[in-house]
Structure formats: structure tokens, C-alpha cells
Image (cartoon, rainbow, N blue to C red; front, side):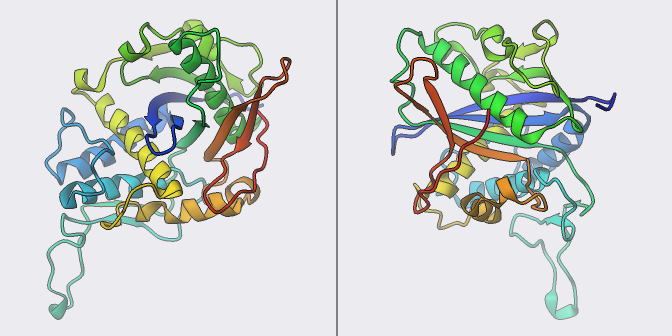
Length: 312
């Protein structure tokens, strides 16, 4: 194993789906060495729309608002690019509010982007969604917070075991939540990461991990950008896959290629995919086996009922 172990931070969002009763853990892993580069891009995207760190930019309500839809589309476009594990085919450009910027095509002018990401830039971001289809209703004998701790542990472990390996070891340094009051108590770090069955390339030291549980409303610093970002990515991916709301403003267009590859399984199978080992979408269900009560499958997408097991 190489001596260099990459440090990551975990950002959490939860999504409760009124349409089908799902509860979804959204987990975003950001490399510490790329965090500032990512924050700078998100900050510049937001500033084009007059959003500062104190201004919440979540997914809710984005599909029906022309102005907000452009802001959210740029977040999803950046998110798709951050997840690349291989160089892109070309640079990724972000344009002004009208989508192209002001220019006169009749004079041979071309649009000028306000941000460009080089095709060679890689960010190492990972994202996982764990769907609990019964919203924890089958988990008895636990308070609400313990149900969240238990299933979050499953989601984080599955994401880390899938995305990393012995040639790419990582250590989790910090965990961020968007508040904890709705769990009726503080979350217990030991119940989230304190188990012994992590694979050798995932370094977990409970005494060395910091939790930042501040609610979004209490954040006016750089961390607010990432709390909003994981909110947008999880909401966007769920709505793209399950098509639960009309997207007449084409907000979700940047996730189209990811959706296709999730549906046909190439993110799991094809090592040459741009998003190989950067995304997991899985579903947890309860079994009648007391020795193995939890079962995990890749998520069953609408019109694509074939499931393939994940190994946690």
C-alpha cells in the first residue's frame, strides 16, 4: 500500500420523498486537497446569480424557477465534472446568466465563459445514495437517531468500499451534517464509523474525526457552499432517475449521461467510464434472516427492474 493516504471530508444530506415514501441518505466525499478549488468554482457560480454564502441554494423549488433553474443547472454541471475519474473530452465552460454571455455572432464573436475547467483537471469527488424504501419503518427497537446512524454507516461504508482500493487508500477526517435537532439528540460518531469491519484501505480513527453538525441557517462561511451542493446533487440525481417532477427548464440535463450509465450498469462494470468508481446508488431492505437482517441491492430504477448486488 502506498504511504500517501488521501484525506477526505464527508458531507451528508437526507431526502425524504413524499411521492413514494423513500428516505435517502446522500453522501458526498470531498478530498481535502481539492476542497478549496471546488469551493472557488461553486462560489463563482453562485456570485453570477447574486448568491453569497449566507444565501441558501437548495434543490427545492428549482425546477419551476427560471432564474434559480440556471443556477442549479450550473451546480449539477459542476458536480458531474467533479465526479470524473478520467480526463474529459474537452474543457468544461460556464457562461453568463443567459447561458452564453453577451456576444455578437454576426461579427464572428464567440461566447466568453466566466469559468472554465480544464479537461485534465480531476477532483476526486465521490457521491453515494442509499435508499431506504420503507423510511426505516421496519427497524424496531431503535430511536430515530439510531436508525439514521445505522443506515448512514451502511451507506458510507458501501460508498468507500466501492470507490477506493488498496492502491487508493483514504482517511475520513471530518463529517458535516445539516443540523441534528430533528433526530431528537446528537448523532453518535461511534455508531456511524466506529465499527471494526472497514477494509484496510479505509482509515477510520474515531478520536481523530471532527463532526460539524451546524444547521444550514447557522452557516455563513464556506461550509454553506458544500451543504447546498450536496443538497442539489442528491435532489437532482433522485429527480433525474425517478422523474418525479416536470423539468421543463432542463435543470437536470447535466445528469443525463450519469443516468444513462447508472441504468445500463457501465458505472459498475466499465473501468473506462468517466464516472467509474465515483457513484453508488443502492437500496436497503430488511430480510427475515435474524443473522443477516439487511440486504443491499443496486437501486431499482423505473423501467429498469434488474438489480445487481453490491458487496458492502
